[in-house]
Length: 253
Image (cartoon, rainbow, N blue to C red; front, side, top):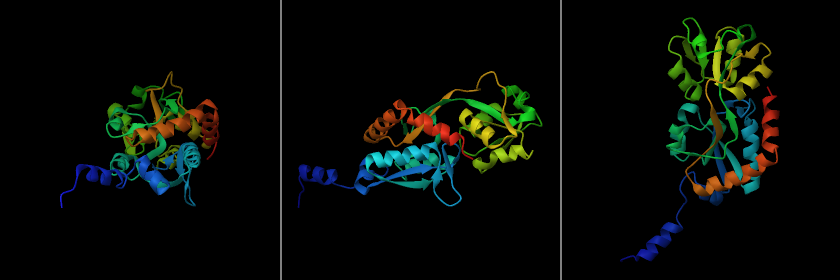
């Protein structure tokens, strides 16, 4: 039997939505959100299960706004691209930087944080590690988390220091406090959080951040999804609710 073009198109139109799209989320009633869960104050996996942080709070509010249940999908910085391309989630959060490389395979929400890379170290060394050159010296132990922009910065700028990739970003501050590492160059928001949680740590007295960048929610390349997320975030930002949420999260351990 020969099928008409109109019939074929109609079948395609009513077929299952593509993985990771907003249409799929609406059809299932579930918004799948990936997160590495190791980056305070944005998203941190909790010992008893689940996640906490500013991004987590915002996503839960987004789910309520859209009438969708939020399902958290564990991922990792080194697997973020692979998992996104496989459609394992519609969006990912957790202090994700907007980069040209990521724009090749993903979209981003409206900007949530303007930030820059700064060093965090023991307070005794806060006046020592004030430039990239001062950090990039033989004998200086630099620690980074795997697969993210901190590791990329270290690879591009720190060829003389000893760079160690530590698998648990949530506990890197403790490595510096214990004297096993000397310094980490990371996002300013994380520096501020670490110095609140660990009184032994200080932000290095840099004249200005080493880089400038922006953080946002990472999205599948789906205009409908971006419109829905950005529409919600516009109200959160203009009301000051997002800023208050981030500030509150920065004070948590």
